[in-house]
Image (cartoon, rainbow, N blue to C red; front, top):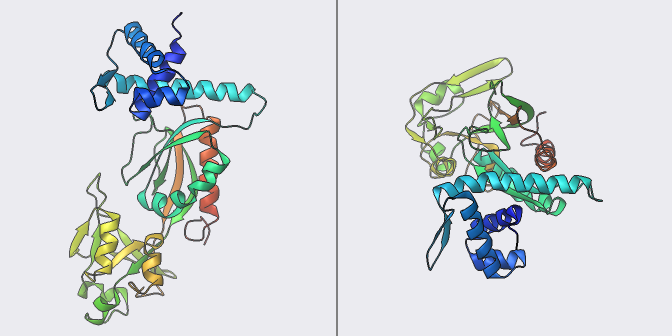
Length: 306
């Protein structure tokens, strides 16, 4: 039987994704011996070893991991090409790699993903969730949601929302501490700060009321590089924190946190969808971008307008 490189690539990708020759064969509707033969033929064609095989698991080699990323992209583009000329031209399919800040994924998009899956069942998401600024081109990421101002000239930038923050503290902490009636009183309190884990840079917070704006510049009592730990510290009464409202909402509703200086607002962080100028924006990536923008526009905690 003639060697079919595309079918061998599909078999290899399914083995990597499912971690098993047997499961890959079942998913492809082929015999395990067929899948094994395709893999052997592909390794022979390339002259490299693609997989580590043990009695318990199958995993890609270093060369195999690199080949998988490129092969997966080729297969996704081929699937999309076929869909574009098929009867159902609106069917987006393939893999989309996306990165976003943890609060956006945890409190906005992941809870809404069943809606995305229902609309686009043929799209597979690889969703990264962190405060790290990724290199989209070098890391093969299709698009990202970025917090803050975007200055990279190689990226298309589409503003889609804002992450809103609030000064928060536990009621027990405030009851045991000095009065807090104005931002000028903050130096008399324990200030908790957030540090971006990738850069080690401390987030700068400011409060504003009308034309007044005061930057919080005091030395923090504690610093945290995890959003969950930062929220937990505020709930534990360790001090005052400037938290994303989406993350603090449940604790505020249940009374574990309150908002002192409620007439002062914390600065919001602009959020943008970015993708490389150099990369063709496929139907599957555009589908995710448009869906994420719609979800953000429909939520008062995230939308662009107040």
